[in-house]
Image: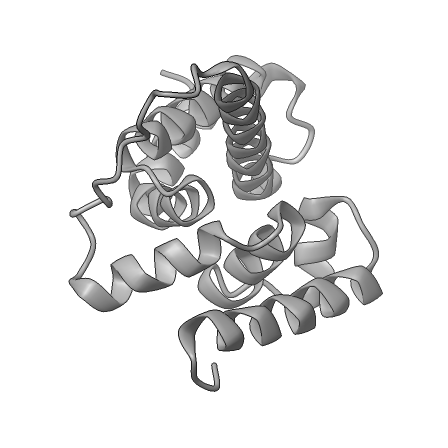
Length: 163
């Protein structure tokens, strides 16, 4: 194996859990989140020869996870639109979290608009700076502040407490 391949493999092993948690919070489904993270890693790995700065591989990996999560959510919206009216959605929450509080938070996050949810997860859960969150989301730093502010306010309403 070459040095870049080893570095990407180490990066995956070191950051898998964090990337998985981000994906779970974005799509609210552990199985889909695992697929998203693995697919994102494979995309970054397959394009490793085009990676100009190997130190930015983690940033590319986070971006790939976010993009794959967006695609998954879009597919769900289309599928939901064409579901028969009598079909019942799976009502079982992801029980792999850490108890009821995590499930309640995941349900509240799922009710936020996509961009607010992304901003909150990247900013507060992944602990990215506003600048880095803006880069990953492809928007301005002011937009990140706005998404976070509105998202936190909405979470406070949904959870019935100050967040």
